[in-house]
Every structure is written in C-alpha cells, then in structure tokens.
Image 1 (cartoon, helix red, strand yellow):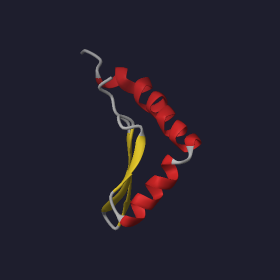
Image 2: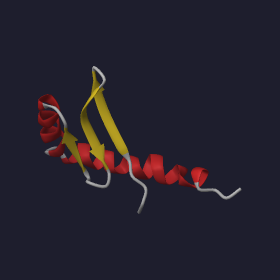
Image 3: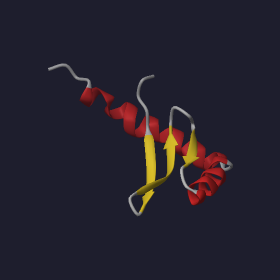
Length: 69
C-alpha cells in the first residue's frame, strides 16, 4: 500500500498536470493543467488505464528495489 505511481506533465520546466495513484485522479497546477485534469478525470477509460499502470509498472518491479542483499 505504500507504493505510489505518479505521472507528471511539464511545459517550460513547470509542472502543469499530475496523476497520482494514491488520489486516483489527475490534479492540475496551471490554468491549462486544471482544464486537462477535468477532461481526463471525466473519462473513465483514461482513469482506469492510469490505475492499471500502478499494477503494471510498480507492483511488478517492487521486488527489485526491496530485495534483501
């Protein structure tokens, strides 16, 4: 439960948008990012796809980082 998938979008070195698996939704940090977050959050297939990324990318590889030596 302590594993989190985060996907951020940047423009001109400024974060405009972020998906966080702990929130389960997109959050916008600029005017444009807020509009994009509203659009992405209203589309269940996009949200479902991003939630699946946690299982595909994070949970599959968790054993690599937490392996005892």
